[in-house]
Image (cartoon, rainbow, N blue to C red; front, side):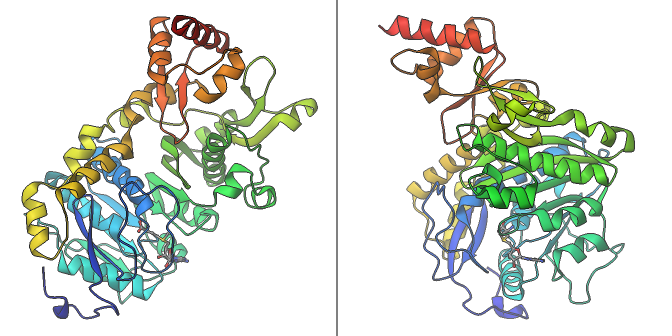
Length: 454
Ligand SMILES: C[S@@+](CC[C@H](N)C(=O)[O-])C[C@H]1O[C@@H](n2cnc3c(N)ncnc32)[C@H](O)[C@@H]1O
């Protein structure tokens, strides 16, 4: 570990306690409880300098997605650099993970900036990165072609740190990759983020205002998202689609069109990743992808562009009704890939232990399980999520099929595939599945599964 005293602004409370997220050493505040593995809910305490461990899976997916863009050339031409901004980087864990965990042969193409308004969080980020520089043979050069960099911006070990209001930071410079991870709703940052993107860019957005997005707080939902919700088994999917729809319509106003890459409801937050391109003609067609979910008598729901007056009571929207993931990109987000990029080697753990990390073999196993969970079911569901599909909650099927109990998920998925349809588990805390089978066929298959267990 480098000497923190050779760093100019050692923050109050430093060094706190060491923790490992992915393969990146993180300093937690001393008073923050050591995270349990696989945390799911909101952090017990949030606020400046507190790392929310429940966001670790989203940060892992962000490492995978950025690495995929560099490797597969879908954002910039092969060999070209990507300028990435974490506009609200707090203690800098995401940007440090990008620098530490994206493969070393791609690192020289990354220009990374972390921005936050909070001085304490930033100094914690800078000191962490100073004390634990990325172990790469890559020489990270500061960029000399940057505009709008504040005078106190710092370049250290391959990361630019700056302290600006995020909206100023985004309006002042152009990026190909912008990450927005605010406390609560991202609404106030969306315009600036979209304007900050180059003609082709990626926007990743986190929203923790799930009460507004799901409709369990109807007044906030109407005020913030101009939408109406229904709190049932589709509330999580509606929340994801509502955020996608909001970003898509905001982008269209700026002549930009979005293609969702990945979009998930992850425990207590919604996280969406979109490819954004400038195109007036494509942006005009956005209305084709915006509509309402109407709960029906004959099928669980239908998407319509405009609900009829008698459908309104059973409808939620307006929201995104187009494809939610990109097939190729999401299908490469496998458990093997997550472990490959983000799981530390035994040598790395040994070296971290010499720096003071308390890490048992059990911790290693837990963190591997956590990495797998970050992407579990994504690759298998990728194809269906990139086209029209039916989303169903397994627990509602006995009622809908009028049978005594739900089949096992695996059994139902295999039976649907045997019947000639595509079917996959959908990543959610609830037992959700996606299929291209018509609803009546699903019901037949559920009854068949039930009969064969009698
Ligand atoms: C949820 S935290 C970000 C967490 C971080 N992305 C991570 O993965 O650890 C939100 C951050 O936004 C910062 N913030 C809030 N309003 C801001 C603004 N207008 N401009 C810049 N930063 C802001 C806060 O200081 C806080 O650090």
